Image (tube, rainbow, N blue to C red; front, side):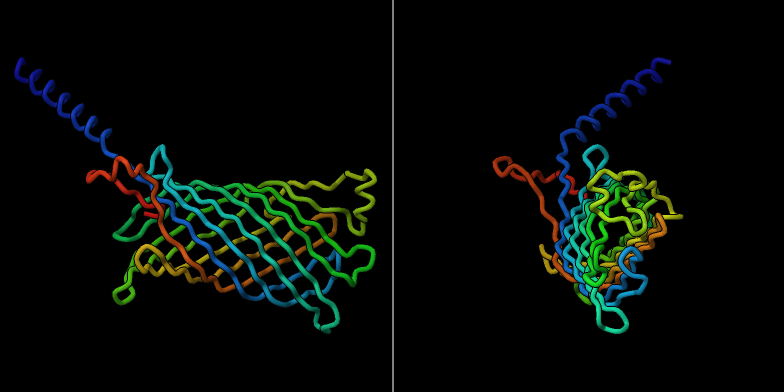
Length: 283
């Protein structure tokens, strides 16, 4: 009996020593940031302005920031994204032009699992806001269709590390799908001057897949050249809304190109410990 108690005491002391040793290990959470531009095609429809579809070009600038969470860096990671997009399309007769401006901001947190060597899967949620407008000078008294929405989204990613000849490459696919939220839509034919005068009823709508559907797909490859990486990829963004007999469809397909990299913050006076743990935002 005394021997069993002695073994238990020795085990508790060993566990305590290991915990104290883990507490002394510095954890570093580098920030993965990317600056990219998108160039491609756009397909615009907004029945508040015109029943005709407009086809043309799409361009956007995107900033993305990822970092492992402080409270559980090995399993939880966050993603912040800010994006400004511009679309321009012509009707089939090429005698009218429609412009679209879209500004969006999203922040989300995901739980990740290392399911295989080099492969990580993650799932979680995000919230975001976006606003902008479509403009068509041919529509006379109503040349602008304003857009605004706040959404709660499902999101996740699949990341895979591989090699392209001698260069390390990180492939990442991430979809974002709004589930609920709220969005703005005037009545069909309602002037914004009437809204200004006080006609505020029926402008806000609860978003669900029946009246607000948006699917943002992004597939990227980070080709690592040392500390800085070249990011190339493809993005497809589908937006479809219907409220007050107004239907809006904005579909873009674009190539993605830019730079990405990892940055770490630490106290230079203390230096970097040999026992420091470096936890990536993706793996």
